[in-house]
Length: 233
Length: 233
DNA sequence: CTTCCATTCGGCACTCGGTGTCATTAGTAT
DNA sequence: ATACTAATGACACCGAGTGCCGAATGGAAG
Image (cartoon, rainbow over all chains, first blue to last red; front, side, top):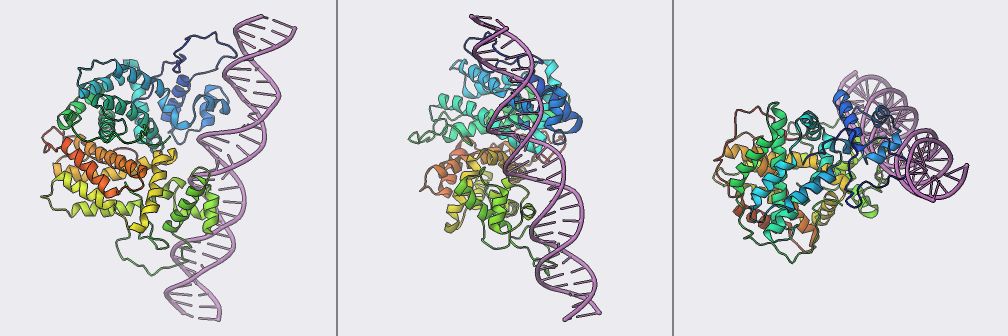
């Protein structure tokens, strides 16, 4: 649900668990995902997303156009930064929660934690989310990111409920948590003084009373073959 | 949720309510949305979506490349056909339902009705949906269509609940119905012999017991300004 | 039949996002 | 210095989408 925070100028560890800090062989990268994301965001705000070209971004970053595409697979990915590593963190966080914690509480707190940012980051985050929720190209593209996010939620919910991750209940839960998060984000963007964590919390709590988990009492057809990915490869 | 059925070779009334059947002035269109959609679908199945170029589609349809873009704004829109008019129908259908019919029943039956197709159309519909749910480009693009669909559902739910359409509850309901519909569609695509209507019905009924409407008992903050469109202009 | 007019058609040139190829550059290790 | 590794960036190419404009079509008015 949330694009990667940018630790300006800092190299992001792209999920390199083993042997951190390798001997750094060969030529050094001349920039970073985070820096490009930052530069691009600036330009998007100045000139608009569609009016900003890759050439401009590359030029301002002092790299070649071709090089840009080695940092980001597409222009649409710029506002997201390194999202996958955030998902890894969320997955780990969820996994570390005590089994006694009810599903809805686990998800609520995890999502809120996942969307906590240092105060200095907040303005940037606001603008990123403003783009992601309002520029049609990005709205569309973000679906692919949301799919990964939903997958994380669905797998967690599925494990708690004891059903396959691609069955209806975890899928519906994942969708609904996404939906409520997005709704909360929209409120957040609408009100300059709003606090994201509080909006998320109240949104989820309101949902909890509607969505009180029925304890996996319903059919789930575990005989189904697995297809862990709800949409798109 | 469902792309327009193709009445082969028939001109689709593009939501022209007033003065139907105008005197037809000027040159006749040489093809139609439906025909192009049909031709393109064929090519997508033969060669894959990404491998099919607009030039090929235009060539097979016997029109110029430039002309193609007067029938469809983008390649991504081809599988959807004339979706807006279907939405109009669904909106009208919902509006005509008796107020006594509970919200969940109204939505369930409306969505099922909305996804009913003549038997001859079913194979085409299967292939369209297969593309829409599995080709990443289309998965992403479809978000924009889903947004319109959700809007219809949210507005209906909002009216029934007596809250603004952009408040949390109708938005969450709309998202969830979308999610469950998509989940049902995935099941449908996985099983050749499955009947879509039944899958939708059971999916929604399963949901109803989870999602038993709390009668708008929760806060909804009607003091908020309106922003009827949840994402994108 | 001819003229007028509305509307569609389609070619051309252009922009922009994205990719494959490959020689070049900047580092580390020997 | 030399060998090796990894990142860079120039070039060429493709496909989607758009602006422009003259040509084609067909009905209506003379």
